[in-house]
Length: 269
Image (cartoon, rainbow, N blue to C red; front, side, top):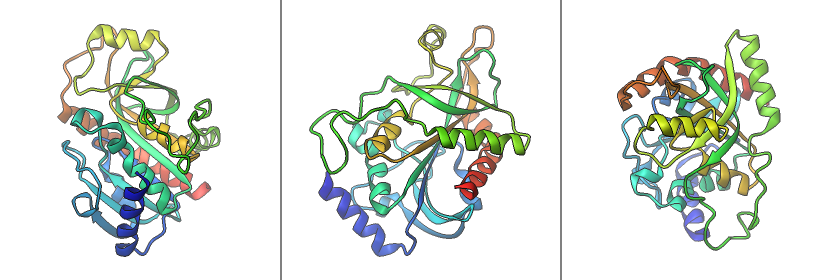
């Protein structure tokens, strides 16, 4: 894997003149943040050696380098999922590459279903913990140059970032929730009993991404901030049929608030 990472990094560095400080992964319907990135340099995933391709509507499939909140960033406009048929090494390969490109922090976003009865559609949830029900991306031989065999996950989501995000939200009169994200394989949306189960085991929101990326980031000791947009509700009495198109639309409606929080956080780093 190290050889592939280095090959991919060398290619990207031959095409891009920006050395990013922060990596940003954009979830379903949340690609609009890239409009605020200045002095952009773009790379299509299909041109990058060893990179998977986004196969899901709402994931454009581009690396976008530039400046946001006064920091040099690289944004993944489109991520990869286990349900697309990729193995977990492929799903998380881009996070490894971003680390070797020089990022010091990773910001992650997603669209998710709320299972906390206090949540409403369109809410933002700052992730403070997770329950990973997707195969762990670290299964297999460990590469010592990437991280330790048994990485600790007690601080998977950086407490400084959580505090900063809440401070930014309050200053800008944006209501935010905080809670635990449950990562599942998908691609089915959940049954009512599955929603109930995720709530019972401690979840506040559920989605089909994020946890593998965070695990790999923490394996490499990258500090992580993650935020969910609640695009549907898995709460008894509020459950209705959900479509991928609706998830994208609600994500787009709420992403301005998410973008503001992330941009102001970057200024405060």
